Length: 222
Image (cartoon, rainbow, N blue to C red):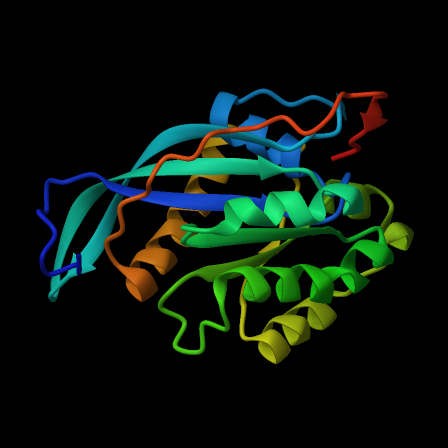
């Protein structure tokens, strides 16, 4: 159904996937935006986790600005290589994929090409940009503000990566320092961008699976 066909009062549901290497802050972002809680240490995500939240956003419809209600189905994914082939199966039907890297860890930036290729292998090339959107986010800005010498990825390099791969630069952030309200404002901007490019979509529910036992805890310095 197109935007023109959508009832202006009907809730619009978007499926958004958090992807990226382990320990870049996906689970911290997932918990902060959905519950407002932040934890310095998290158990590494095994498989997938999903929660939904509501956003009311003024958007342009046929030249008229009106407020629409969005339901965001946010999916947290395992970043470990051994789960990659399984978690990519959950990309299907997503309108947005938020690709995170750690600005203090160059390896997480160098691995971005693998993540982008994985998305396109699963969802197609998306040449017109109207099927799904990849948004690149650099996390752990709080560490760099306190210790500038720890920066390993320059903003200009991240912006260049976006241009080279035709993806959207979402900026740098600190999941640790940002409040839930500040993250919601960012998500409103991202959601509005998805709406502009993709329009109205209905998300079909998927069963959430756990992949194997959790054998150990790993830090998530977010």
